[in-house]
Amino acid sequence: MKRIIRKFILYANVAFAVFLILSFLSSHLSPEKIWFPAFLGLAYPYILLVNVLFLLGWIILKRKELLISLLAIILGLGTFSNYLSLRPFRFMKKGHYINMVSEQRKADHQVKLVSYNVRAFDVYGWEDNPSIRSEILTFLRDEDPDVTCIQEFYTSNQAGFREREVNHKLEHMPYRHIVYIVSNPRRNYGIASFSRYPIINKGSVPLEDKYSICIYSDILMDKDTFRVYNCHLQSIKLNYEHYQFMDSL
Image (cartoon, rainbow, N blue to C red; front, side, top):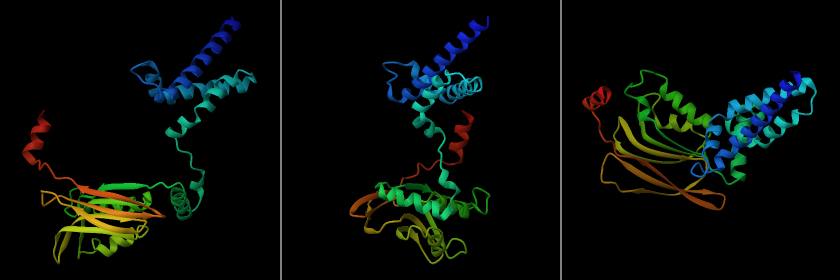
C-alpha cells in the first residue's frame, strides 16, 4: 500500500512539474494552435505553490525526487519575477535607491514615462479629499519617471496650487513644457510635460476643439533625441442624464 501511495505521489509530482513548465511556456504558445497551456498559465501561482510543497516534502524526506520540482521551478524563475518583483536594494535609503534605478535606466537607454490626467488637481473637490493634490504629486515623485505628461494641469495664485510649488514637488524633472489654454491672473488651465532630460524643442499640434490641446517636446538623452506627444483628448461631454441612463441599464 505504501508503495502504491509513493508511486501516486511521484506521478502527481511529475504531472505538476510538467504543468508548471507548460504554464510559463503558455505566453510563447499560440492558443489558436494549442489551447490548454493558456489555462495552465492562468493557474501558474497555484501550480507553483503545489510544486513548492512537493519540493519541501522531498527535502524533509531527503529524497532525490526533490529534483523534479526544483528543476521545474528554476526553469520558470523568469515567469516568477513577473508575479513578484524581488528588489533587495529596496533596503537602501530611498533617495539612493531611486538614483541607482534611474541611472540604470539611463545606462540601458530606457525611459520611464507616466501620463496622468490630474483633473485640475481636484480643485473643485470632486473627491472630497483635501489632500488629493498632495497625494498626486507625491505619487509622481515616488514613481520617479523620466518624463511625465500631465493633462488638465491647473495652477493658481491659491496656496498649494501655485506653479512654483508644483515645480518644487517635481524638481527631479527640472525641464518643463507647459501650455495653458485658459490663463488669467486668478487661474491657469492647460497641459504640461516634465522631463529629467533637457527639452531642446517645443511645439503644439493644432486641434479643432479649443478645449483640447496637444503638445510635443523633443527631449535630448545623451546623444539621442526623442519626441514625446502629450495630448488631452476632447471630452464626449456626458451630462447627469446620460450617467443616469447608463446606471439604469
